[in-house]
Length: 103
Image 1 (cartoon, rainbow, N blue to C red):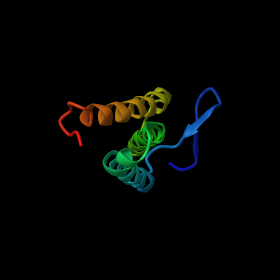
Image 2 (image 1 turned 90 degrees about the vertical axis):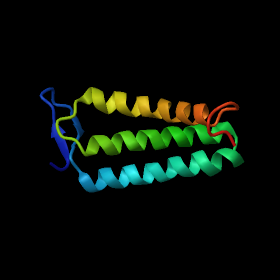
Image 3 (image 1 turned 180 degrees about the horizontal axis):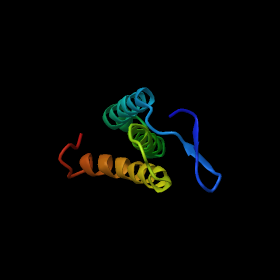
Image 4 (image 1 turned 60 degrees about the horizontal axis):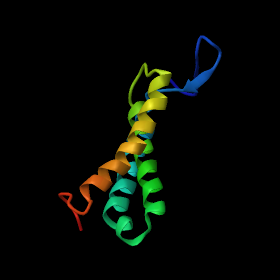
């Protein structure tokens, strides 16, 4: 399915099952996450790092949703929000002062 799909209410949402876009978005977001968590985090202030990590999380969520069919509108809202927060919390927990991967 390409373009927009029409809901019964007349509103539209992004069409799903776009394998190339989904995989590309996941790979790009993973690269952004890895670069931010491993390098940028050590050279930039938190107000730069946290939005980059959140953006990477949103990209992974949207890329994953693009690989699925029959995704509800709620998934398009909840998944990106959840992974935006989770990616920041994940890096902060792993690289915290007493975390397992502190540097």
